[in-house]
Length: 465
Image (cartoon, rainbow, N blue to C red):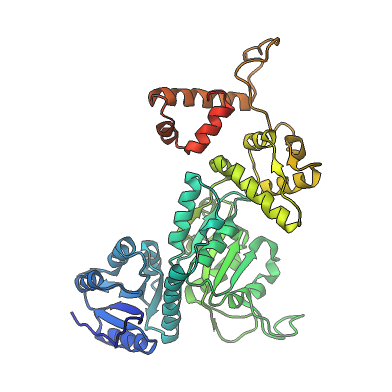
């Protein structure tokens, strides 16, 4: 093992360089030393493991191929055992497959050989910024609200992917909050001080896409009266969020792929490439894999942007969060409107819990904003919500009111309404789970895969409490 250490102090950031080429190690030690970092080096996987066991590092750079193993293995070990140490892979020029493999293993980013010193400096500064942000800044994950298991899992995944520079494909139905997730990834990552540039790919006319994405030079086409920077240049040093990426036409997909791979763009009418440093996040409510199979989305672009796939759950999968979400939305809207926040009546909460929300949280916000305008007093009732006809159904009572005849059972000619049928199935499942767990509600909730709070609500709703 060859070890080189620059002058150190208690407050000096530290780096570990793992490469079996002496020239590369010396170049990186010199560059990082000029940046003020204390740098250790290792020529083998075993030596790197020994260094990691003895010291804490603020950043690690490792080669892909080592005499006694793969740098991919080291990345996996660092991600698992030293999660606060961002690690970047040094790859051969143009080896996109290796770069993607490294990112999937948990790498923060990658740099190609021969090493571009400016690219290296920028990468290291982003890694150090990520570490400082974790230590100094309050968590921004609270923006992804909810106590349900689904939201806890989403926040954990967002916190993990924020530590890397890997492209993330955010999937989910319309209105689930994909842009909020993208903003949170940006805000929790090392690029938080850089720009966040959101783009709706479906809103840009096809003939203007190249100019919008890459910019143009004066006189390059009719109407180009001055140089204009594109969205990639605007996001330089930060994050470019491509919403509805499935709407990109095939010719633009080819150009986007080249920009991602080369980390540079050529403005329309320009003669030279312009280097850009962006992290790419994308989102769609469509099934990209199905579009690839249908030939309307390029397989190579799908492979490049889908290094990490992050699914945002629809509201119906975490309905137990709805009462608190609704309360928070009303409070925010009331603050924006400079008025007192109304409360939700019990019948309004019940109606919302029974509504399927095809538009998810965005639809919930629209419904509540309309209800606040329609409500006459300090309380919002079910009538104020004005839910679509047949959508908000009151819970079915387990016993008919006194003096009334019990409803006739469903027949093949007159089947039960779907919500009632679903409630019956839900009731049977909960009753059986309660019996199996000797009426221990905590264990029953775990078996059913819902929170204790959600079980309590369902017991009350179904008259089982």
